[in-house]
Image 1 (spheres, one colour):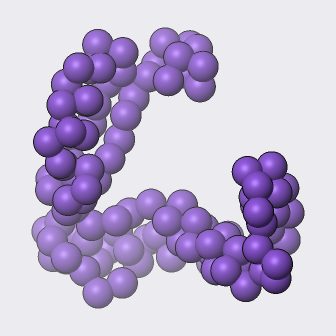
Image 2 (spheres, rainbow, N blue to C red; image 1 turned 90 degrees about the vertical axis):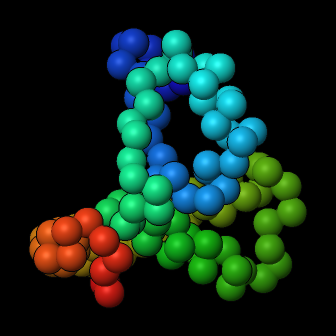
Length: 115
């Protein structure tokens, strides 16, 4: 955190999914809470972050590679290349989908949505 946020504005955000709410994760957050601000979200709150979709696109591209990357350096190189190959239209579509996602979330008052 101190390397990424050298400006002192350290904030940690997570969605309280079951793996994130395990005792060991909760304990770690409590032990390190003096190093960052932790946003408290409702458990299993709806996903409103397009980075999940981007990550899925990169993972899909990795799964289709032959041969797959064998070393961390190979993986890093492949991910950088796949990132550069993402079509701008894909990213634009994700950004443009956000008003619909927010509207759906508001309609269900923060509950599960169908998007």
